[in-house]
View (cartoon, protein in one colour):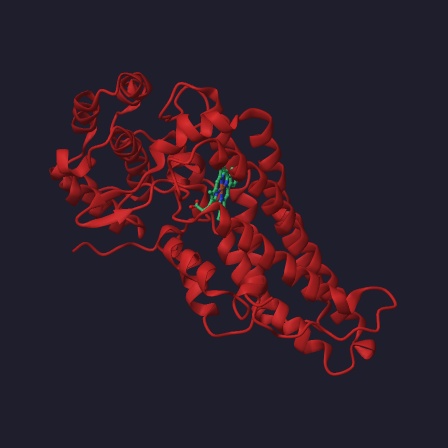
Length: 374
Ligand code: HEM
């Protein structure tokens, strides 16, 4: 067992370094993957994976940058083989310990995640892709443009646990969260503009299947792994969630970065920001201090951005899954019905949180209720 080092995933240069890294000298081999996929050449894909596979001893000497880049490249071939049917690691079992070591040394799952496939994947001629269709590149870009600000938003949300809703800074930081979440909405516009439902359904979705590694099925690099679930947890879901969404998000936790897994653990059992803002209103919302009203307004702004993202995302997902009923679930283990449910929960919490702040409103603060009801 190798100790997993503490890695600063927020070090500004990390992303560019991983994108630039090619520790497996895989550039020429990876460039052949779309052609091998077009031919359904499983033997060729396995040979490609063996050609770039590192020795465990080599991995043990690597830092996080090399490990992340190596996982990115092996992961692309794992998803490719799985797309054509076989379990990739049954055909190349000698790679299991290497994947496990890469996972350990980066404190992540022993498979590539959405971050390997998008954020740590270089744009341009070295971009790792399953297909030779530029629509795939647009989808990768649509995730890349979300992640840096999403990461900052989570940092702000984490910091809010030390501030009271009556503190003027609470509204300021929540307002920043609303801004930082805005790229999720832009991302949906990018997808609508450049990606057809048919390409996602037939061209890409089959590459995002789970693969078995040492007896455990690991999801393919699905965008559902982006920690929007953690944004929800902090904003409203920590004390308002329903069981189906909770179950779905718990399956996604292992695919996030160590810091976000820790934040999730730290939030457990505590109130959400919505719960705290509601409590701060006290029994007479009319008399609530202005800072508390501002905090509620900022909370609603942030929730509305999430609602906008989810409304557009649901529209896209519905089109794709209506087109083809081969898959009853998305690549992250959920369904379009679940997406609708999550959207409704978010809307409901935005509506409840907003009530006390409506100008001239004499309504009571939002009740603490199970969002699954009614
Ligand atoms: C054609 C493009 C897309 C389709 C068809 C699609 C479809 C889906 C489906 C069916 C789910 C349900 C859960 C699952 O994955 O199993 C889902 C979840 C999710 N997707 Fe997408 N997706 C697309 C693009 C994106 C993009 C570009 C992003 C982000 C930039 C994204 C972010 C998410 C998130 C965060 C979830 C988790 C549920 C939530 O937070 O609402 N998706 N997607």
